[in-house]
Length: 557
Ligand code: KG4
Ligand code: ZN
Image 1 (cartoon, rainbow, N blue to C red):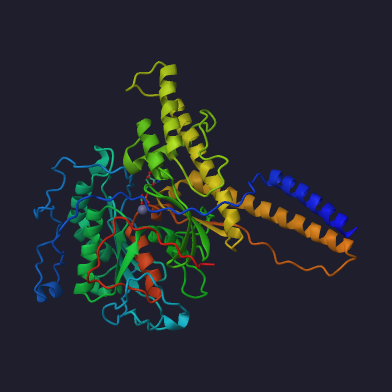
Image 2 (cartoon, rainbow, N blue to C red):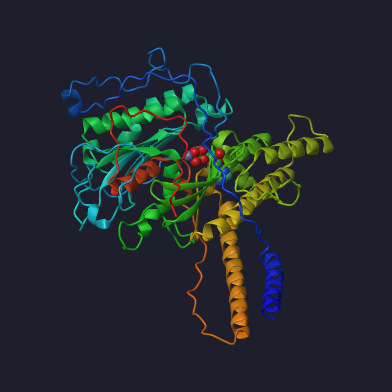
């Protein structure tokens, strides 16, 4: 009799599971873990760059040469900017942004001299108590006013971004120089030209950010942070040498920042140190932006940019588990290439142009294959969609008797853009559905979308719906389980009913659009997050990493 009851229950449970899978339309298989490396391209030659020293009294006093401001070529000559033909064009796709943001000035705190931390990647444990006097030369702040400022520098690709950010998430000053115009004619980022452009504007960007922050010099900031990788080696070196020189000259703690970590941590931008409420002022929250801008650990991060497409579980600063990455192209790269085919924008301008055009089109007009449909892993692949899109464009031109150089009418063009975007997002939704199931079994219920492509409004809206759907499906699953438990306890002759806590809802967190693409704020913020943990780096011997896999932290759960 007992055996029969158990079998009956199992059979009913199986029917329920099948029904539920239809209701929720989510796949039930548990995906495996995949490991992906950053796919940033390495430049084969390295640059011996003269150290940069600012024209400050301190620099002069220290006997430094204040005239060596710009990066040199490998042969030691000072660069002439855009005069040379490019030796190579990277396939990296990049964005363009305008300088933005400023705020009230804030006197910096005193620091305990230069940082003595090591860059072993080990983060000391943190509590609010050990913040005040951290071991590695941290700000000597008081618990009543634990605020310090950081100068952040970003030069990993084709944006020179500098910002002064306060540790409570207020942007005091920001400057950004895009190289879009320089690379436009080459159809991609030319490393040598990018390096020269960084070198020619880096001083003025630092000056502008400081000026907007109401600061006379770097002496007034608390610490200096810089992207040291991954990225274009010769470009990374411009920012890194500048930051090292500034930290040394002004005796500031120095923080080496991983570009992808900086993108991910922007999901936490403005995160308060303690239980204080997040500041609206800091994060650009407004009534028109219902998506909360701040994620708390742990969260699932979808990192979508021109060079990366990754799924990561973020358990703490420096504690990341890579769930999947792209097998070929990144999403931003696919957007940019599709835009080029439609002749609506080159380089990183392609993504935003595609988004604008797609608004006018019918997403079902052109049928394109959804990548990796039916595959149960957490990786992405956009090369197939890119090729299918190219073939669709060619076929349509043939059908409409259009020559190679002739353009589509605006409606057809918009339909093509909308169809591409629709399928590109479908791929994200399908991978994310699997990842969310995987992560929620470990107690993760926040999805953060970061990187340049996260500024896309259509993606934000569809992933918001995805979070709601997944929350609903989970509620249904739990409700059915409860009914089953009730039925089985009745069969056993009753029992006490447990009152369950309400189920966590999947929450979507996306940084404000202008902070999704590369900028100095994200570097300053990543440095702030690390400094709060007592982590900083030694300047001496610090080099850049063109390739720098995003370390996975195995024991995160
Ligand atoms: O994060 P990011 O500034 O640079 C990298 O680290 O790669 O991302 C740049 C990428 C470009 O491929 C650009 O086309 C894409 O982000 N992007 C967009 C949008 N805004 C930027 N893609 C789609 N829709 C957008 N609105
Ligand atoms: Zn980036």
